Image (cartoon, rainbow, N blue to C red):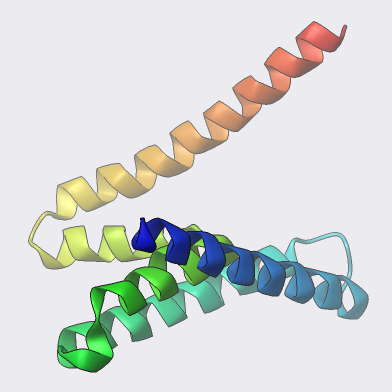
Length: 128
């Protein structure tokens, strides 16, 4: 129950940070390219790498499971799920499963886009 509460709180924090960056980016840059989303995905992936490495290199009291879950699944999960996607892909590659990594990345991209297109088509079709 504690871990679920930490994820809930962290996701709220990450979501608010994502929103604030998005608002600021739209003020600074053009609307013809999703600059904010790209920046958030890159920053989130970088931070996921920093946090993942920190917890591997610093086990012990500072590296508790609760803090790790709060920061990764919670804050970064609310900020961007792309960071988790990136971490999973790199872990597959580092574990000596390059084909699984390529399948995961390619499948997530292609099937994710297909799923979104399918959802749009379904609702548009129902709406008439």
